[in-house]
Image (cartoon, rainbow, N blue to C red):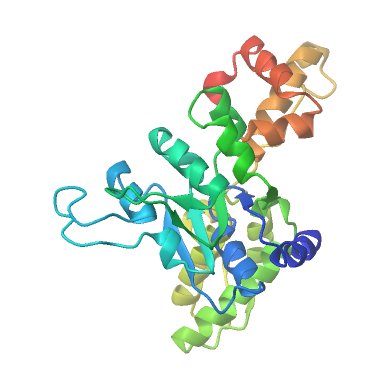
Length: 307
């Protein structure tokens, strides 16, 4: 994370397009806001849009605007978010779900720094910096024909990957204490710390919802606790009951339960894919395979349906 913070400081000083990747809940929008705040554009607007929150027809109008009469209900001219961001930052979240039919228009806008509002014959120039984010594996999406290759290379000028919470070690406890203090102050409760058994539970859990899930868990714990330290019974049940499933390769000293090297590989590939949230690009780097080799092994071991 220290390397990430250092990298963000250098990125903030540029105007390059940034691609933020990472699982849901790792804080991609917080990073985008931090980049904006630390940039020379900080006095101008930060405008965010979730690309999955609107249907395709409304998303085009939301981003690029429209002229009056461009479609039913469009009674007046409307500036889209590209212009509303001014000289600030436009943050396109969930870019991996951007409609395929609109991707050529987005690509052209990013390349030319101009676009054409719906119903207009005139090109309009925009000045905002673009930051995009996704929890999808865009390389897999390209191979499956769901994301344009040229658009991928256009948005991937600088890529920043946010690690999942389970990969951040005792950062979990630092974040938990931070959230505890915030919620204790908001609820006017004298909750000061985390009991040791709670810390062990927090470190053992794999946090599929990442920082967002941790924040929710701490809000619940502060609300429920009757003491000045959070206890195990204050945690959500799934965290209290969680037991990790380590990768096993055989039955210890019993030769009859030992498995082949192929089975060891199969189990480890499945474990890595689970840990990285089925991000095959990241999994292939960890495993030391190229992506094609990983896909061949997935087919060979019948793992496609399990990932």
